[in-house]
Length: 340
Image (cartoon, rainbow, N blue to C red; front, side, top):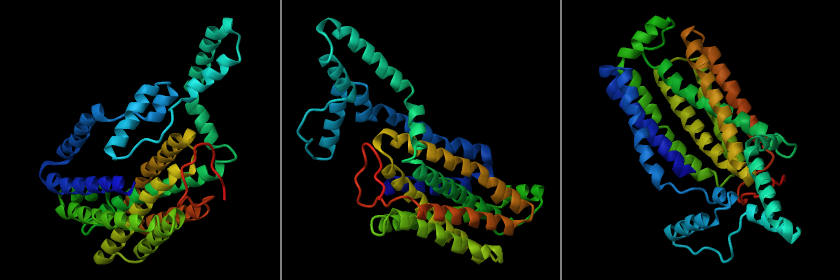
């Protein structure tokens, strides 16, 4: 996951450098068009992306699942474990067949197949309901808070970098817009601050397996609060740059670790749904953060904006501290989460 997050960092730096090059001369339309090019290139990988073996097994497509697993084994220079791959769908059909009369085998199998399809159609709703079951409720709510706080803080710090850049501390909306469009130093500052994510990635890689997921995230969130604290009182340029650089470093590290922790607290049956819903909650935080990072700063309420960021980050750190268990060294659960 740390390696995967490094590509996000590369994309962030690339986008900042693109804005620095394109915006002063050509404007936002060209920036938007050029930024979309990598997305179209990504479509080329669709045809070579393998399907999930678990999904294929759930659909009873055992042969295709075996082909994917064998290809994975070859690419990793390992041997598949001995045994026969079976799917839950086939097991249910076999169990039903052995308990039925020979004259009703076909009809019962067809009926059971229909039941399985009906279960699959409501699988998403059942998964979301399971996320809020007594066993998972605490972990789910705390994880939502962690995702919300990380996204709110990460995108907010990026926006604060532009709002608090030298020459852009202007309250009037019209003046801010004109300054942003012509001042190349803005994009330079954003470009420089983007490099904070590189040490953030290295830091997360060093501590996540040494001190654990919970302590890693909590320490990064609380340290981010420390970096932002001077902005409540001072607006010196060098202090602003250092504070935002350090805060972004810590938040990017925390964001990486929460994506490592999230899959490890859910059983396989709801893992993707749990991560997807938590990520969606995080996007809500990303949507709301401009109301703080932009609107409050524009209305000359920088102190209020920083205090609100401090509160959200601090509450996220507390949420991480109350996570039900540490997942360092644990195997992924297939059935249920074990609280300890």
